[in-house]
Image (cartoon, rainbow over all chains, first blue to last red; front, side, top):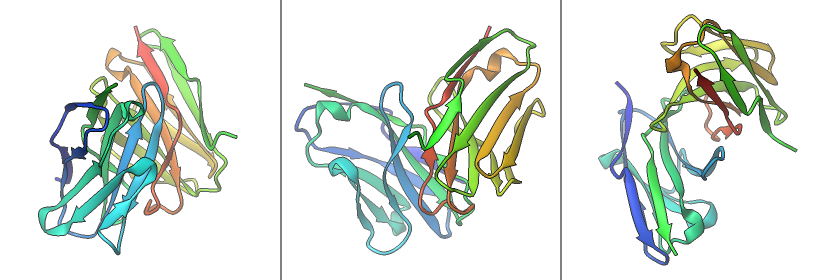
Length: 113
Length: 114
């Protein structure tokens, strides 16, 4: 079955620390990949997406992600986090352009000021 | 101007009741979705409609019935509510059923069944 796995469930960082959140998926065909962020009490917002071309994708708020096809991974990175980055982060995959987004279980990021 | 709007934002109701959640999008998207986010924040797709036609119907109890009067609206009706239905329900929309450009989500409806 298609699935998305986020390795880190809860990450605590100090401001200015670097961030990397892991995401792996299980699907052998064409995929569209997404990272969403959910700030406390708010809806999901798109951080960045990949569907073809350069595997290094830049998104909003200084986030980027790298698609490594051989590893079925799409890890999210940010060189220097801020307190305002405290939120829930979701990796999602649209396998085979089906339109069905499959989400990982989410990673809670807590940034200490 | 809210792109994807859901009403109500909060819904508290007793077991056995029937309730509806409404969703409207003003983005001109042709595909709309319902997602359920459980208490562990896990998000799972329930339904998807493309131009009023049901295209995704996951394993969801028959008590849940989506209705799409036009491509800008997708409502969710739930019959005989159960405790386990308590969750946050998110509506979303996108261009084309393939969702290549990502989805725009509504702010969610927190349903509490008591």
